[in-house]
Image (tube, rainbow, N blue to C red; front, side, top):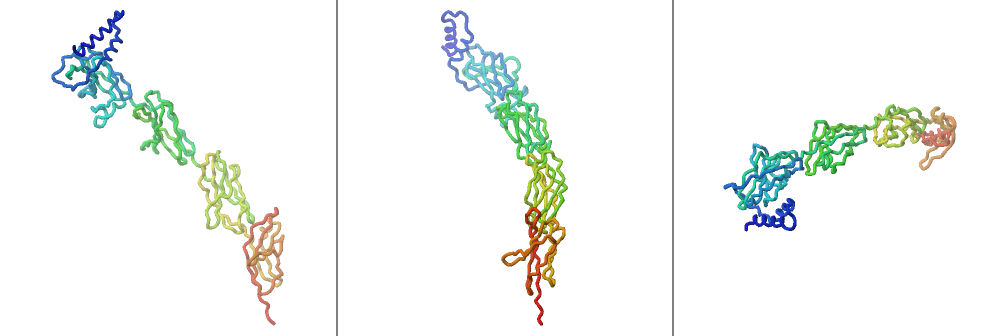
Length: 441
């Protein structure tokens, strides 16, 4: 008895056993599908098999890079299985892409893993792609591998799921410090498995990939470590589970927050020995936190010496040497720690005592500026020696007479002011005089 006859007999014995009078179609299908299956033979096109055409062929469209097929089984006992053929279009040749053994196996899934030509696939390999249309037909074959005719009617057409559309609601947010945040709504396409965020410095420029995000409901991304006042364009595209990337969205423009403007109006508003008082115009930004005041001494570089709150526009430098040449500048800092460029530098010369010394018949007369003494409570007068300095007197007036001198001396003098609060001003420059020798008889 042939395999097909034995299977048919076993089926009818099972259906008619017991008290069941009507055939159970699902039971019958299960018995047929669980029966031993014929191995797939080597197929031959000539001579053709005398088999009926396959009917009821249907394909499910919209699947991710796959096309499920099903058809009605043939009851002819000479049918050993089915061959599935695919074409790229109605004008193209049908290629054999799969086969199933057993005349009651009526389903097959085309995943495109064969080497037959496919849309956009290099050298014919690869999967079926996204949004691609294919034509199908199914033919039966017998035990000797001879193929029957194609099915009745036109081939069945099916299209794979297209790559995801750009997600809705895409936005890019400007005015953030050195970063840009983008957001979007979840894609309504169930095939979406993530997103691709791209960026370009121009609307028409080449967009580079910033991130491959996983998850259909991942809907935010922050582009960090950008510069101040930088312009960028962003796009978003959906990505399906097979790695296919859809068309990108329309580019959205974003601008990072600018740094504060350089402060202006820096000037000297008051000055005394050892102190410079500086003031400037307030910045226009509403989110400033502080001003950093910079100072540069001779042959040095700008270094911060004070920081004041944004509401303050004046500072006192109390570390100024007498007649010291300095430069000042300002930097504004906002609440996001963005710093402005440095302001225009302000050169300032510290107040000098103007000390002068003259040898007279009474001794050495020292004089200094009236306006300097006006800011001091008194002034210490020092003789500067090789090893140490000695105070020789104090004066509340801008002059002093050193009458304790001897002929043939070289003397050096220096002043140190005492402020009304008791603090010391910086010392003056040293002046030097020579006492002449006494003439002989």
